[in-house]
Image (cartoon, rainbow, N blue to C red; front, top):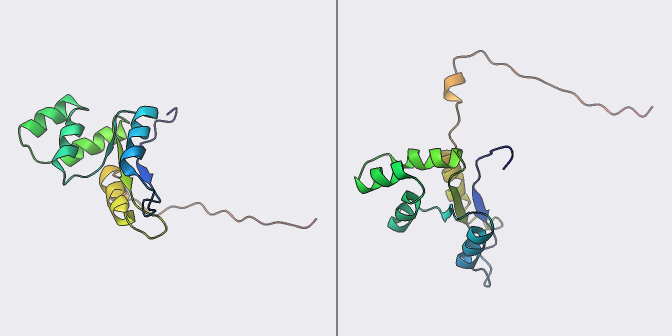
Amino acid sequence: EAYQVPTVLFISKLDRPEADLVRCVDEIRQTLSSAAIPYDISSEAFWEEAALLDEGLMEAYLAGEEGLEKQVAALVGQRRFFPILGGSALTGEGVPTLLNALADLLPTDYESKEAEPFAARVFQLRHDQR
């Protein structure tokens, strides 16, 4: 929290028979933040719950506006929304969804730097026995 890093949560091992996503989400919300919401933009329940986090998002949602995903991404960047995704890292289940969510919710500024000349720092580490 001190560094204000946007946070996306991934609950793994959901392929196990004893896995309980609902219980995990409840624990996260009680322990960490009530702004942690399972991320599913195709779900009406997600949008209703996300709209409660921000007045501007609420107004846009109720008005049926387009582009709500950008507003949600802004909330992630401001650490006012913590998306929860789930799956199994071992089997790869849910990983593509996680990667898509990261791309959508945590935009980069790479495109703005394409016109700049390439620059890099190269370091070589060497261990000498002496």
